Length: 404
Image 1 (tube, one colour):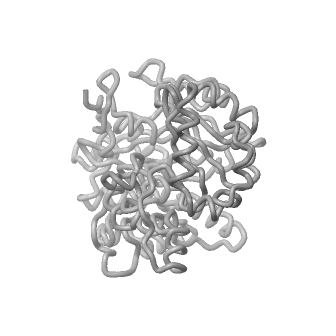
Image 2 (image 1 turned 30 degrees about the horizontal axis):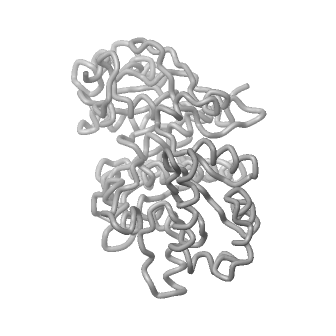
């Protein structure tokens, strides 16, 4: 079986997290991705550790499997000409420059559309294409702060905190990939290409959507609640006799089951707790009473009983626990990949399975410039022309070994 995007050719001029995640999704879905990198250093994530075997960093390895690397100097006109030649038979072009930079390089949508009217052009930037902030730079954490996410993240009695994953970079990549797939479907019906735009700021507002709706209804800013939920109680982290656990009760039925596990069936009819709005109103008292009971036994004791009763709950795992868990193993989330330098390389697959398509990781993340010669040859450059481009520094086929 092949991937559903088999035969789709993608020209990828992105770096860091957001753009490479988008093209990783497309490549895992079967597309051929030509990754264009800058001379010398390549993608910024090649230098983001930790490292193994003195090679590229973990960020790069996870986000750039199934791709082919070519090094092109876009400061040179001949370098831009090469990219435009790639566009002639490309299906998709992806960039994540700051607002206006692609156009200044001659690689904007209208400029490339004139070469290939059927091109799907995908762009991710920080703040979107309109508004006073459209030209501002912004990394994931900056937009977490600007979009309101950081302001509502953290415990009430602690500092605000960044969500410790690149949730806006990778969230924007998901929307971008969905846009690309939608545009490819539309093109199959109309024959027309189009531009796909998304941004970290728009993604942040979407993630905060129900908080924004609540503000419209109440006129009040949401407050930081740690692991608790604004709409449900009990829902959060509770200390047991040995370690904390997470419990999530989102309706009255589950609350009744929790009461049974805790040996407090009378709480179901307690006026303070008889429905969710009442429980939210009396959150602090209820949470305190629950935790006092939970402290009487170990975390394992309570998880066993909560599981048997069907109450959503979990011990709070460390990353090392997750990496070695039976659930992770059975799902096959780690996939082994042959790499020319790193032995026993395993990468996290897409969290997606298609019954009629193969979404396996087919190729290890490329070394810098690993495919420069073959990509140029596939686009009609003969050996003499390739040698001249290398000698003049327009392209490079020097395979970099990364940074240790």
